[in-house]
Image (cartoon, rainbow, N blue to C red; front, side, top):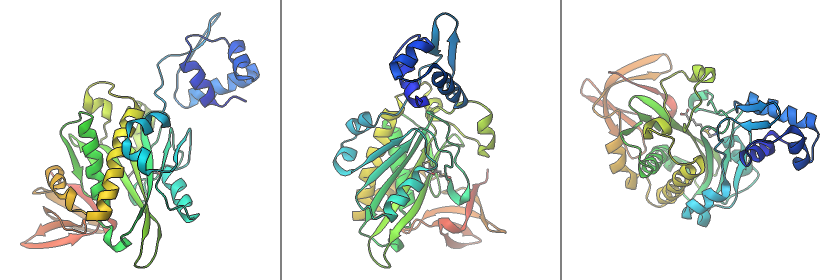
Length: 327
Ligand code: BTN
């Protein structure tokens, strides 16, 4: 049977196509074409069936193109071995973690049009509808041990914002440790997972980015659980293709991964301070059942959040707390 994705590519390149014409072109039965059309509709792609004329996509679908991503990013072309691009995957992070466990050490990237079990921070899931946003993971090997990677997530947040600013986004901020925000709404987030680390030696990490680009308005977003936005809204129009955006973002991420291994958090501190949404603000920190209140005082070199409470400054690591910005 024709995969729904093959059918989608076919329909993207034609105006109207009859069921018989599609079946002949793809070498499948008409029943298989009908099944793939139904599957596309389940994925949220609107396919019009016009009697006497055939099938047509109601709106163009912006599919990822790995060749365009490589062309658009010198760092990805030069440094990254495999660039996987799946129609559907449980989780791009999970896929690259498995590669690392299998012994892969060179940099790899994995993107998916859709994730069925996208992972968020703190055990949450990441809503990943088809052909709408960017779900990307990068596998990277560091010379530094895991104990020196505490601030890596913050550096990756800065790298993502740098990319979005290159694309024309303004008024972005970072909510510690690595949520990308615009006007109080979440635009994207990062999930870092350690893949294979020796006690005091080199360490492999998977950096996963979920970036809302053109989130479909509909029931699926009800469970996101916090105010969200997307790049199209921030740019006030449709903006570049998802591959164009992915190229710029992955370029900045790869450059930042190299810089972090050599210099640590230092080259990111100035931008972090500019983007830090918690600095000088009243904060609420949830440590399991315990709630602490104070004022944001920036970060330390390990990427820990500094909060002042009654004249005392405490440092908190990302794994142990969840942050709320009070108004
Ligand atoms: C967060 O909770 O803010 C982090 C979300 C990270 C989601 C991305 S999507 C690509 C990669 N694969 C995953 O399963 N998760 C990350």
